[in-house]
Image 1 (cartoon, each protein chain N blue to C red):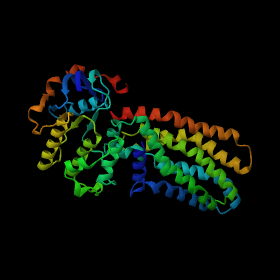
Image 2 (image 1 turned 45 degrees about the vertical axis):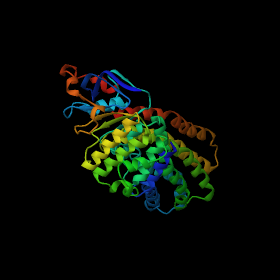
Image 3 (image 1 turned 180 degrees about the vertical axis):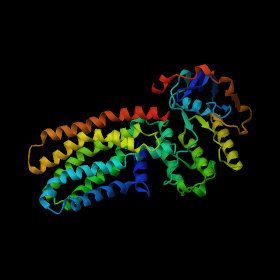
Image 4 (image 1 turned 120 degrees about the vertical axis):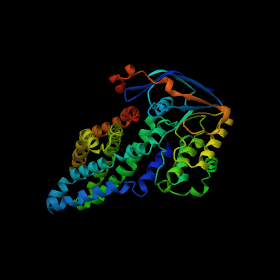
Amino acid sequence: MSALLLRDIRLAMRAGGGFGLSLAFFLIVVVLVPFGVGPEMGLLSKIAPGILWVGALLACLLSLDRIFALDFEDGTLDLLATAPLPLEAVVSVKSLAHWITTGLPLVLAAPVLGVLLGLQSDAFYWIVLSLLLGTPALSVIGTFGAALTVGLKRGGLLLSLLVLPLYVPTLIFGAELARRGIAGMDVGTLMSLLLGITFASIALLPFASAAVLKVNLR
Amino acid sequence: MTLTVSNLSVLRASRHLLSGVGFEVSAGQALILRGPNGLGKTTLLRTIAGLQPVHEGQVDMPEEMAVYAGHLDGIKSTLTVRENLQFWASVFGTGSIDAAIAAFDMDHLIDRAGGMLSAGQKRRLGLARLMVTGRPIWLLDEPTVSLDTVAVGQFGDMIAGHLDRGGMAVIATHIDLGLGARAETLDLSQFKAAPEQQFNPNEAFL
């Protein structure tokens, strides 16, 4: 399993692997918002958690179709399905690799970009924490969507339409957690809900992803 | 150890292709599958490999013993030949890739990226992967496509060596691999499914 994880990370880092794509998209979204909204720092810092969360979510969405499509096209997925690894493990490892190469860089970049949105330094903690807890769910749910659409030619549109509604709860609770945390309000319930979504996705979705992948490989 | 297939029916996208397929391969034996294009050779091999569901009949073999090689070689274009092979060696828990490299004479290609290989070289790498899996049952679908005559010879030697070590192989090919008496030939045309059996819309969802 570690071989698969290392391979996926290595592939993402090599030229054309798409490692920089999500990060660059995130950067562009966040840099453009102050131009669009205007330079009023009070307003910007107020909407910053939402902007960062929406930006991270869309950046994550952008990279989803790479999770399985490339392995499907060159036949690797067939070979992995007949390898000694259970397909559930393959799917989980691929989610993890996606999070390490997409989610984690977004989490780390968020405070830096937060500066552009006028966030105070004590707000960084809440932005990073909420993204850190929420982005694993984005990767796991996205892997499920990618598994559903893997055999389809140009399934990117369908993938986005399928996955976006599933992302909404994570977005609502994640952004709200960051907002309330920054405002100094109670975050216990939101934290439980966000963690609940993340852990439930990690625990359940790999089985669903493996099942649909098996159907799509026929 | 034997691979026994009895009364097997295979479907492709709810179309009934073959029915009543039966054969037995024992250690040290190869089975060559013949039949016209579109008959269902690939689907049969994928069914035995477990990639397609068995519609009817049985495939009996010890678990986790078979390895499948299809039309695509599963080569990552940004990884080198060594990294590609090493990856499969670690997935299957076998150590060395040297024997596989030597079998297809790929020493000089070892640090070349997968994307820079020719079609024949890719196929050689795809076949070399079989050796690093360490599994005894090889299911090969048109393995000699885009190989030159030298590589076909090397491939024949590789299969012969595999059979000598007690392995077995089911190969869909139209080329004589020089395996002599150890290879039986099975013409699949006799198992072609009757047209009235050919449609069952529910099957696609099961």
